[in-house]
Length: 308
Image 1 (spheres, rainbow, N blue to C red):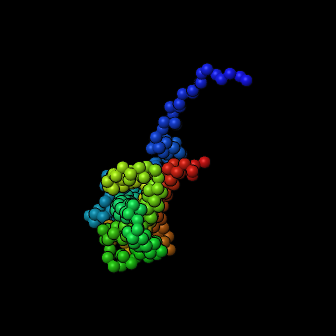
Image 2: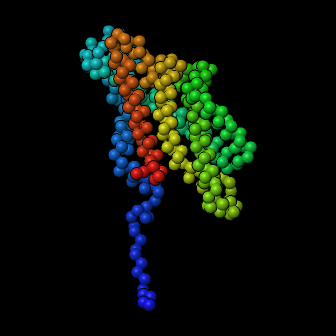
Image 3: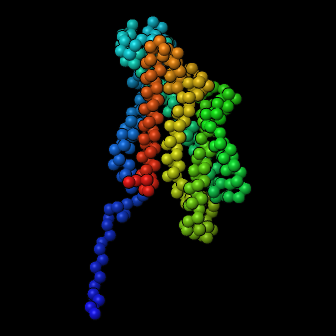
């Protein structure tokens, strides 16, 4: 029999990926993903165009003093009577389509982000309450969620807009009502999984205050899937608002979004004046695609099982 060795060689721990935090891993995987970088760059261009609209737009399309009816329905690349070039043409009121798209992006993004944030806060609260309190509270909240999710979102939004009327605040209220149930179900599912883990049992055994257990231990671990859902819902809210505005039930004509710009040119499509609807439609498509690209890649990096 061979003698046991007198010394045991212990290899040093790796200082790279072994000590990397989950947040650092997510950030590293995200910035090294070419699809994620493309989505981020595309989304940044859209957001910058919306924020800088008053500074980069050739005209204020909603200032009547800057409009000329003689410039209505000009083709892309046409020269204005007062000088300058309409690179994307004009609509039936003589508005520069490029300027109208920049201003329309501001309204569409504002409505989408505002409705998503408010719906997230409501859904987060309801989902955490259902998972942590359980019992009748959970049953009541989840039955309301089930009933709402059994109807198409567009149907609920149409009914609410018909009751509330037009206006930015009313459209946001309708979108919040449609969206909050998605967050409530997602947060409740994630919270139920976390609630059964050992660290939650230890927190309860230590008699920690419920507020500390919920906000310090339970909530942070429910945020990753919620953030992914929120990113997707921003694009869904923008698309839903555009649908309502296209149908004439969303924002008023004094606050046109991309959906309303598309609707303004719909009647001129058969006459060959495609640009009035085409370019706002392209802007809407690029906005939604960029958000969805970021959301898809964010979902992949937050869930290692989805990575190849």
